[in-house]
Image (tube, rainbow, N blue to C red; front, side):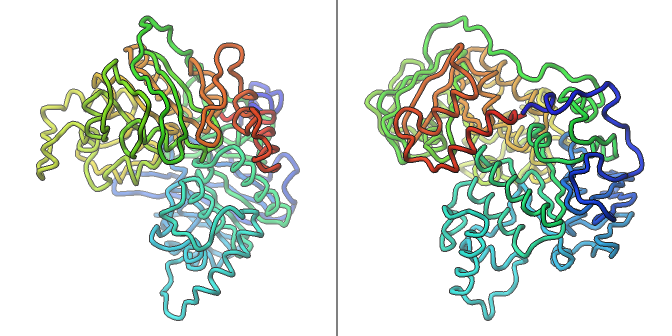
Length: 548
């Protein structure tokens, strides 16, 4: 369901910031507030990340927390979770003060959290991560008991596909996110904080999360739900508050808002058209052609991408999309019957050779594959272009300052400058760096793995515009997204993958969300291999809400 369809909103439906009050919808349980946050302030030196924010959350209520990147949402969430100590202000849970600066003590108060930036230990098994949420000492730890407890938890949460014995590092990003969420649900939380916890999930994964949230709130638990996906907010939230520049900009209740109204309140200006149209092609040549591509998880895929063409990749995550993009960039071994870039044959492709041949790649996991967090913003943007790094050298930022400033301005990256460490930026701004390194660099093909994951609506619009601008310059774009609406509105055509093969190609009037999901769950004859729950959840996703 599109947020604008939730209810007929009057012009004054969104309320400006005011004193916190009870939920307007009546869906949450009545009674005293479970959580009360009063005049929260968090300063980092002279910078106030959060200033004077107050709100309440009642038993059985889902309270949304929305705003642009850098608005203060994650800082508020971390203060509620005990990970960050407020400079001033108070937080109480069931009238008792919440321990500041200690996640472990907050957990004892019944507060659990799951963040977009995962807190799992990659070298540990799923069972170890679930059994030791605070990184407690391993003395006296029983692997057998941990596996048994993890199995019981995963079964109770309907996550049978996750092996408690598996190393977290071997899981897909979506499954790592599910483990993070499962850990937060352990122990029947009173207050569950989900900070962009759905950003790596597929539509069925989001529906799974919503089912667990509804079970928790039905038992009287409360949820703080932070998300940039307005369709999710429309479906799951009873009420919400809007942050802008660290302060409280307004509040809303279910059915009282439209997308444009909420975007305007977050940005402090009138919302623009959300999705740009794919540009008209002026060059009918092909920049990438591959026949019979074979790699791990990829079984004989053939595709072409034209100059200036935006080709989407649809389908449920885990059906070969990540493997396809990695193979095309040379990041994993692959063979093909024929393979050309700009008409020239491809042999023994590696990432270094791919960059030389005009390829660019935005990977699935920006922290693991896309950035060196300890290095500066400028060094990360320039990383693909300096062979000297292989010999221990560093780029001279002064020579590229004009290009660096142009990229940072074009994508509205919030940073103190090229020397600031990439790890100090918000997740959305880090994602912009991974994309921005390929701008204005004479690329032939850009390979994108969910580039808008976990970024706010204005940042999404900026990236959509940047993708369209690349296409206008003649760059071919191959774009996998878990948000179906992106593919429908911005792509010229969409290839849907299922079990490592292309099951359908959609364009023109056939390019709809229903058609993408239908092909994604095996509507070409293999539907019996998809679980009933997966089929039901995927279908419900297209009919009940927009991915915006």
